[in-house]
Image (cartoon, rainbow, N blue to C red; front, top):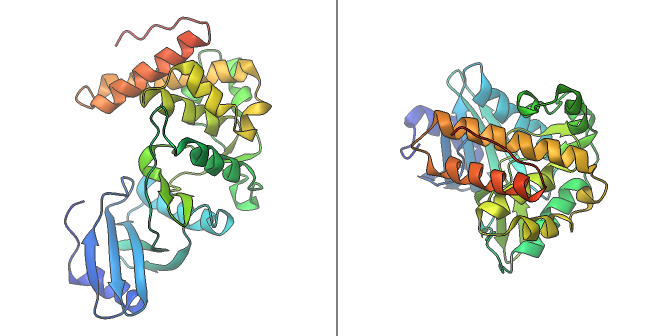
Length: 269
């Protein structure tokens, strides 16, 4: 949202931020109802909040808070939590970073790979053991191949320029909106589609993915199944949201990838 909630929201976070409280919205936080920087006597914080209603957004923010202790300092630390009848809020440490540049020749590419390798090195926390990755299951054409997407790696999956931030003092993966447990290659595979969408050839994108430790042990059959599922997912989303140009671009990128891997696909979109 571009506007900010009123006095009740400010009263909820004031004990954590301090006075004089200053709030201004920021562009990050597509999975939240409020994304803002908050400044006060206790410091500066990135504030992410959702309405306190049962469902996906609340569950997502709760899960983001739960995983945070295990993914620091890859992710900025949650410094405080607040909840009322109307709101659930996380206050993150403020960092100084810009969206990563995914385009061919970008000097950010090695650091992007570095972020994914840091994520791959995080042991699966016990809290995430039941968070099985199933989002692509319905798009796997051969049900027998769904098991190829299973595994015991902690997955981030929300790989995109706005979520990988580059700064003078570090690089971060932010917005851990839905961490899951699955096959380790899935994060580098998500990177492949993003790189193709940013202008890389599929071969170049896979070459960058090959620098990710989680890619090295990937079963080619699993990568093929995931690539086809990714194309089907984006094709479905693009068909249901015809005005969303970015979805069409992602579907085209995924299609280019599956063709590069040597099998045809048909979208009907």
